[in-house]
Image (cartoon, rainbow, N blue to C red; front, top):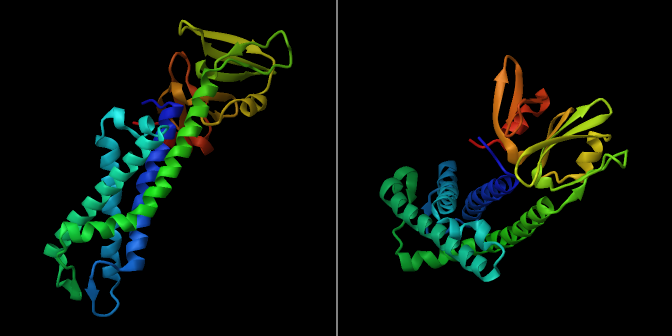
Length: 274
């Protein structure tokens, strides 16, 4: 198991896209009650059926993100406005198609059940309605993806630029790329810094500084403090293991495991991708 800061950002953005599609479409269809669906009296099951369109839409977005070739991934098109516009339009069309197919399935399965009727509507007749309903979601999603790409680019630039690690003793200070930092470990009034040199070899140095200062200077998208004695780069997490009632992180390049405090176990599990 491993996760990089870029991967973590991508997972978060994908999750947002999937959840937002389901929530938006379920809410809008319940408010509009469209497509000539008729009902005699109020039936909660009817609104549950309309809400199920949101679930179908969320699955459609998940498939879109999973099955597209890598060169057409969200990360690849996000920084190119015209490609992004086309990507979002195709996504809205794909979700609309999935909803139309689902509406045909509903007609053949639940029409007449509990006084509900789902009419048969042709593709040409129904698709403009779906496209109009989902256009606002597509617009918001496009803006979100564009802003996300800018944030991701900022993180990547930060990771590749040499930075001076703050030290109370000027003689201790040295420059390193944040992307090359593997782990920081407290040692009395010092920090033990584990980092990679340009040949990807693990190095280790002691500097007189505090973990609090390091947290203030390092990007929180890349680094996480699982325990008061450790600060780790998410890129180098290889796994999570449990020894009796204690949890530890397995880190690339390190010959020791990093302790996790009990309050952070749940959060760190969410950061580690199977």
